[in-house]
Length: 238
Image 1: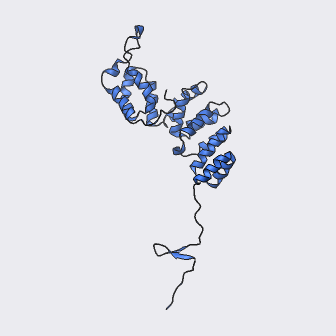
Image 2 (image 1 turned 90 degrees about the vertical axis):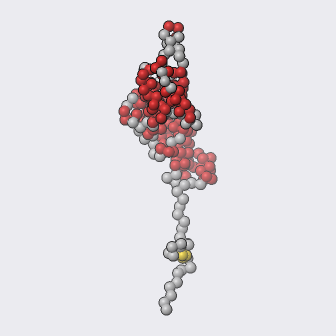
Image 3 (image 1 turned 30 degrees about the vertical axis):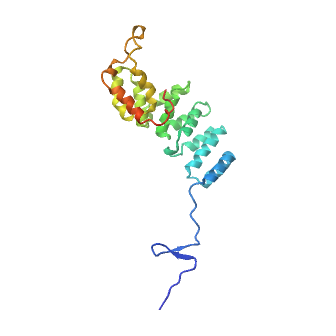
């Protein structure tokens, strides 16, 4: 009979196939927690080296962006941020871009990121900037007025902007259904003052929004927003 023999470096896998035990292990795609902590301690240069080793590790890219910002390298920070996946754009990263948008030397690049690659989070940043000092405030307001920018807004940001833009009682009342379905915590400081039954007319004794009290829609909207709110208000909520 003819017998076949496997090399001593081969083992049988679960399906009866051969695998080579001496073959090199696949390189990990993500840095270990220890590597990341050590690189952070080493500053931007160490994080750059780690980013080259793990180019697809979002956590490394995020820390590199923060290191660039701390070193006043806004252009480099923005270059990293615009390549991040949307899920990696947390509040800390968004704050860095918003801060860069308020500096003359980095405003153009920061606004370009907020209006484009950052998607829905970019709209959140523009809402924040629309409440800041000029010239960032005016530039953000103009950006938010553009249809291609507004199209990127999350449902929560969209109803926030629409409700803030509503100029009369009926227009606001008509939006309460969307507020109930999609409104987030940034709308609460806008909604709650509407419960007041005074503030208009002679001596401010007249009801400014009587149509909002013809039914329970305003209270229902406020309760719905409060019921799904577990985080602090996003930037630009005031």
